[in-house]
Length: 258
Image 1 (cartoon, rainbow, N blue to C red):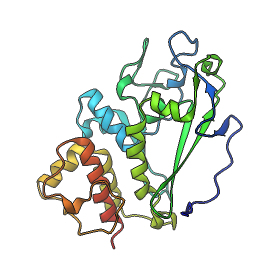
Image 2: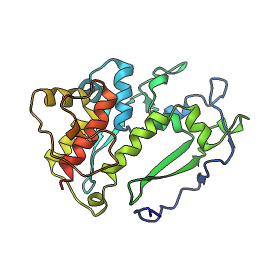
Image 3: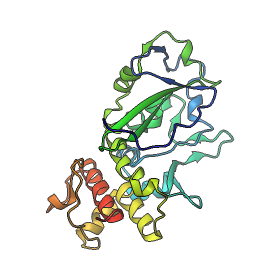
Image 4: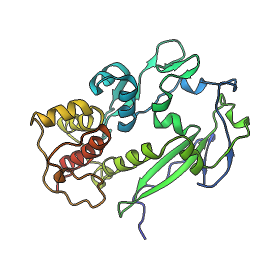
């Protein structure tokens, strides 16, 4: 049986409780709830590569324009990879740039963290390449949605919120974020960090550089868990989603040679 190669899970805050996949909870969010859109303010909204892909589609911007206009990139000393956050409006409440009087203006393409709330979802990579998943429930003081009577389980809520696609991309990303070399504390060069940002968050520029021959394709990599292996492509994938999978494997080959 595969074992999870991780440290013991951290202690959870008092308002966060772990729930089983089939455990029932009640929650609903809609304009009739008096706290509607309060969760869209005074928050740090982390963005995954797939979040940025969907935001790019929602706004009609190029990936570079999206990063310049709506995304904050941070990396503190000692952190392995940079973190990406959605820009907030300077309105005294740090409101999401995409929230309006009627709610989210990009609702069909909202980020995974927005879809998952009030749950949280964590993925740990197993020694055999599989994924171990657990969910938590987050009860914040401002949120009145728990008083609603609509019943869910973690599994049904994932399905209702359209998280399948998001989870598939985010789980695939664990091959990089939780690679054994990362767990052992490896630090990457500025050039490697630039490749991380380019191939995962700036897809349009990544595609342009590949087509222009400015980036080399790595040699074969032994990873039977890859959905799209760079060495098998003579042409780039035609759409952004396929390119993102391709880019994950390209990046993994560049960062973790051998």
